Amino acid sequence: MSGFNAKADLLSATLDYHQGHFSKAKQEFLQLAQLGNPDAIYNIAVMYLHGQGVEKNTAQAYAWFSLAADFGLIDARDTAMLIAKQTQNRQPLDDAYDALLKQLSFQWYSEQLKPELTMTPIDDAAIVRDYMVEPKYPEHAYKNGIEGWVWLEFDIDESGAVTDITIIDSNPEKTFDKAIINAVKRWHYQANKDNLPHYNRSLIYHFTTYKGKQYAQSFKSQQRQYNEKITDLIDAAEQGNAIVQYYIANWLSSDEYNATRLLKYHWQQSNASDELLLKSATNGYANSQYRIGANLLRGEYGKVEREKGLNWVLLAAQNGFAQAQYRLGRELLDKKYLDYAPNKAMKWLTAAAEQGLFSAKRELAKLLFSLDNADMPAVNRALESALADDPTHPALLLIQAKIITQKDPRAAKRIAQKALKEAKSRLWYTGNIDTFIASLP
Image (cartoon, rainbow, N blue to C red; front, side, top):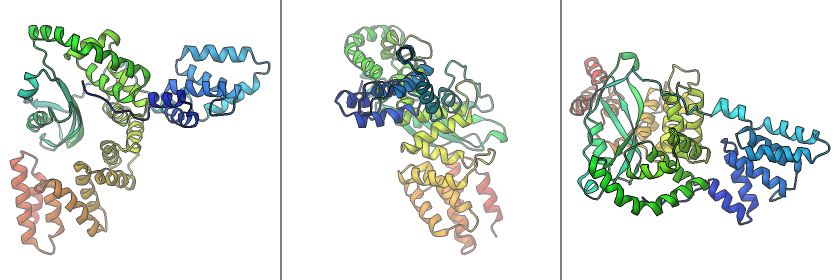
């Protein structure tokens, strides 16, 4: 169990409130309210009721309490009813509530962001894994009883091979990364041509020491060791620490952790993992916002909801999360959808590339090269940056070959053959490279 850094979330906003930093607290609560955070909405109502950081305003307090009630807070409904009962003229109260609903409402949240967490994930039968290698549990981690998880995304090319694996997050950091990469790069998928290539296949892989009797024995010893830490984590999550909520959501998504068994004494509902992930997302944590968005895009909550998914991915991208910026750029390049917007895609791919994300660098180079009247200095800069991370990447070498075709066809062929050799060594699709080589004189 590792420590967590505080971030601007419900907990930090509440601390600012209790320390009398009302202006800062209100600003933080307002940001969280826009994400549909009911506790933040309730706290804004309290500030208007008592005149904390704002001018005391009963009508605004009523409006915000009523909105919090719309989001399911029973205490807020009771307080709003009490204010209405003690007010002779209700019209200002109703006017304030109606005005607030034009800015933020539960209906808007339901239509634009709210995932249906109780729904069964759709079965993605279009893409089926037909070869798998289990990751090898790192010996030092196993001997020391270290458990953890890795969240990664990867692409699947036209042949069904896994390409360009990206580790998004892991816990403990870097403990299991190499093991999962070595396994996943050997996986293979089967699908028809309409479904390949496939981008941003997402996976959370759990490394647990669950082994029958050994599990029962280790659980007894770990229960004593974990109890105090688990209690602290539960308290932090309940108080609104978005990062802790995110990590607990990840632990709860597998039944095989010793820690999970302890956590489930507190969070007993079957979809506790999803509920906590959503709490973390509405609490402003970009990792959780991106995960919710990615889940919506692939139908994790019963059906594919592209608009909601992109809204969450956009929130994470605006929070500076590089993987979300890249994903948004990729999605906006898909011509199947009405939201196709290459200029916006360029903006987000550039933002992610500037943060050093290889997949964004690769995609940016491909996009710049594909444009009519391509800006060749810009293409070369993007290509150079991407090749610095992976000097033998087949797709990048192919672009390099295409750039010099007119000027030096022999050199272009040499580079293309190098790309072909590398693609074969990685067991990747070679069709586009073969076609290019065949077109050369």
